[in-house]
Image 1 (tube, rainbow, N blue to C red):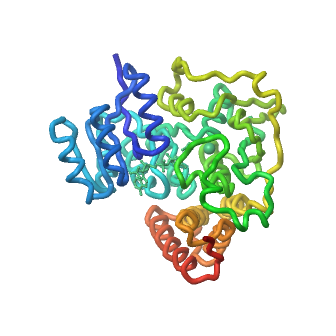
Image 2: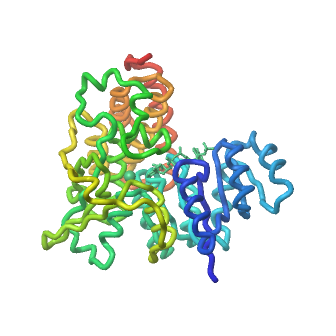
Length: 392
Ligand code: NDP
Ligand code: MG
């Protein structure tokens, strides 16, 4: 009986814990082989006690002694630091690497895993946003699969089963619209982190929840879709669908549209990616059409939610521009979360970085690392210097 060994990068997060739930429910199919946390030692320890992985890695080295001591009685190898993740994802026994860490930190481990021939179950969309061309090139070269975990991209991937990709006319990415759907700039000027952290349909990590409120998440997903499905930016349409039941659609060259639907539950795309090309039976709650007599659709408001336009612009400019918007956005979101800048100022920080950071048309991995570092420093300085209205 063949059990797939899974490496879960970011096992203590929203996607990470749901991945472990899928593994717990399917212990005959999957094993958590490697788990990692940034600094949440307590949860990492508890996960290691339950799942008995081969490796548990804590990025924050100051927490190493604590994790090591708590797991000393088990045959779990405990390591610390970002480099330990990069080195260990290449282990020959790993079948799939599920990338569920947040932000740019996912790039290097993903590159290492692909080079070692691992299939990637990709939740960490920032990796494809930053370096889509590099990652998809490496994936081809090493003949590995990138299986989307993001619900929209999993939907598209499922719609494409049995289809020719050159028959895609367009991809219709659905967006919930977030907690501020229908609001205007006046309203957004004063929203707080607490307002922005209330997502109507999904419970997720803080960074992606803010990205959902600003529609940057949809912008990042447009870029992610471009690279995953090898299509042009003008073949991607974003449509607001507040109920989050249709997870996305594909329109083919004969005009026919396929949609993938279901209740919002990340365990479904996670298990689809891990079990691909198989489907696993489960008992999760089913969708009932008559419970949702009104599935509705609207155009996104690009003037109010400027991040989405900025992401489209960055995708069209190419080169290191998506890397710039990603880094600027990570700093802007952190600034909003720690109340240094207002909600709307996030777009100003991103736009300023797009204008000021050196453009590189054909970036290498080193260029991406440099652009990321440079943009973070620049954006951090902006937040400290510019009179971007702080709130509360
Ligand atoms: P969370 O913030 O809940 O979890 C992030 C995980 O990554 C945690 O395990 C965290 O460790 C770890 N981590 C954070 N920063 C670093 C770092 N610098 N280096 C290494 N590890 C780090 O995020 P989510 O689970 O919500 O999101 C993870 C990724 O999945 C993101 O890229 C997001 O865009 C994507 N995604 C998430 C969805 C969701 O429903 N949540 C849906 C679609 C995509 P610790 O706990 O110790 O801080
Ligand atoms: Mg998504």
